[in-house]
Image (cartoon, rainbow, N blue to C red; front, side, top):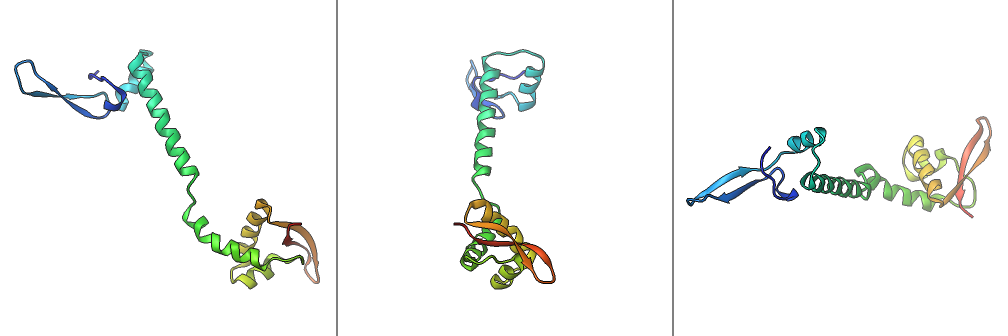
Length: 141
């Protein structure tokens, strides 16, 4: 295995001075080599430090991804705000809300579910003549 003096040097090259002058390029341990050491059961402080730094990198990447909205979610934010403006104390179906906002019934239904989940609106059953019972949405009390 190649020489590694710190976890930061993994997957990097280091230049070391030679005894007679000049410098020698020393390859650091690759990720594969470190995993092979772990698989072989040869645990030492170097491997533990590397594993801790890798876990920290994974946690940071997950946190960054968790806090970022997707492009579609960002595009839906203004639509959700306009849906909130359309809702009132009278129950309205997704069809009515979709027509008022200018989106399809399916998209209106999906976004209304998100509005209900956020606690801004409530979902109730509404009897529609000729169509039976449908979901109606109104402002939360």
